[in-house]
Image (tube, rainbow over all chains, first blue to last red; front, side, top):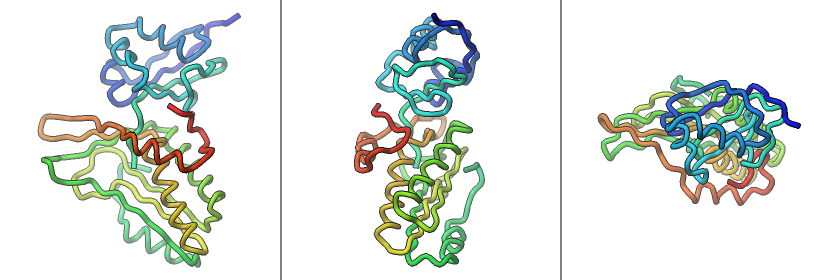
Length: 87
Length: 148
């Protein structure tokens, strides 16, 4: 059984621009990152646009890079962003 | 890590004051030309610092360095300004060169920075390069680096 938890969701770079916000707090029972993405897509057209092409999206769970099927049990912060371009 | 400008020469001089036999440094500079007015660098506060600290620790252990340092700016930078710098000190040159390359390859595609180029009123996000991603393949077992 999955109980709802509170997760801070962060967006960076063009995902932030498309989603229309940098950060939001969500109540979710999503068991994985992929399930959370499904929920977030329903929040607004901007969310759906930001999360439309997952090949261009990277994920961090509690500030560590994570795959789309990563579990969310105990997670407090999930971030979505494009491939990084540092250096 | 920060928005402040830094002086690469001073950073290198500080490293040379140690007693390593070999010091390698790399400095990334904002490329001018093409009408670029400014380079904006966004980052993920918290994750950036932790990720860089972890990678510096990994480089020190992997290449038996005597010292290693990464400097990376964020915010708005003008053409010609230094963006970032990697310094690696070791008893011999090969370890210092390899550690500097390792840190650079990792910074390019695993540190949470995003660049945007500003030309007049137009701003364009820089796209990640496939060969930057491929470069990481040289280094097995990079912590926190799942295949995309």
